[in-house]
Length: 319
Ligand code: NDP
Image 1 (cartoon, rainbow, N blue to C red):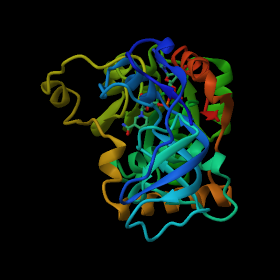
Image 2: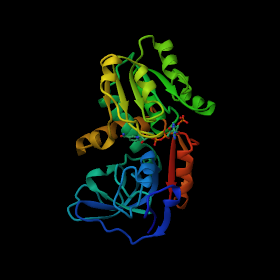
Image 3: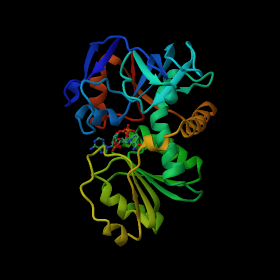
Image 4: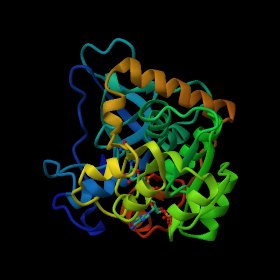
C-alpha cells in the first residue's frame, strides 16, 4: 500500500509518501480500503513531535472506506461494509487497520468522503456542546476560529441547541462563512473580550477555545461568573503554566482541557454521539464544509495550508 510516513518529527517535510507492506488485521480488527482521510490539527502536533509517538508512524486519526478483510473474533462487520472512524492512528494511507470497536457503520446514503470529513471534528463539537458544557437555550457562547473545521460545526450545533453564538475569525472571508453557519456576531481577535462584554453585558456562559496561547487570557476575561473555559486545543501554541487563583478572580470560573478520546471511551458513547451526528448530517441540519481535497501524496501541502491559517472547514486527503 501507499502511505504517508513520519520517521523524524519536524516541519511538513517530515511527511514522506512511501510504499509500505499491506497491514494485516489482528484479532478484533478490520482492514479498510480508505476512500478519504480527514486532516486535523492533531496530525500537526503528531508530526511535530509535540504529542510524541513511537517512530516511524503513519499519521492521520480519521477516515472512512470499505472493509476488505476481518480479523478473528469480528462478528458485527463483514467484507464490503462501509465504515468510518476517529481517534485511530494510521489513516494517511490507502489501507488502514481499525479496531472493530472503533468502527462506525455508515448509514445507507452517507458517502465515505462525508463521513471522513465530519467524524473527528463532529464528535468533538458534539461532546463539547453536550457534555463538557451542556448548552441550554439562551446561553451566550464564544467559539474561537469559528470558520475552522471544529469551529464551523460548533457554531451550527450551538445554534441547534438555542444559544446566541459569538465567533472569532481572522479574515473577512472567514467571517462570511461563520455567519453563514449561523453565528450571531463575528469578531476579529483584537480586543475580543471587550467586544464580547459589550454584546453580552455579563460575559459568555462558555468559551470553546481551540486556539490556545494567543486567546487564553482574553477567553477567561470574556466569561461571566461561574462560566466554563473549555480549552480544547492549541493551534497558536500551548498555554503557559497557570495560577488557579485566576479562576477565583474571574468569578469562580471553571477550566477544563478535554480530549475526544475520553468522551468516546466506551462503544456505547461512541455510537450514541456518532448516531446523532450522522443523523444531523443526513437530515441536512448540519452542513459539512469541505474546503479542499488533496491527493494523499500532497499531505505536506495540506499541513502547510492548515498551519498557515489559509484553510476553512474540512481538508481531506484522497488516496
Ligand atoms: P482548524 O480548521 O480550526 O484550523 C486552525 C484554525 O485556528 C486556523 O484556521 C485559524 O483560524 C486558527 N488559528 C488561530 N491562531 C492560529 C495560529 N497561530 N496558527 C494556526 N491557526 C491559528 O483546525 P481543527 O478544526 O482541526 O482543530 C481546531 C483545534 O481543535 C485545534 O487546536 C485542535 O488541536 C483542536 N482539537 C481538539 C480536540 C479535542 O478533543 N481536544 C479534537 C479535535 C480538534 P483563524 O484564521 O480564523 O484564526
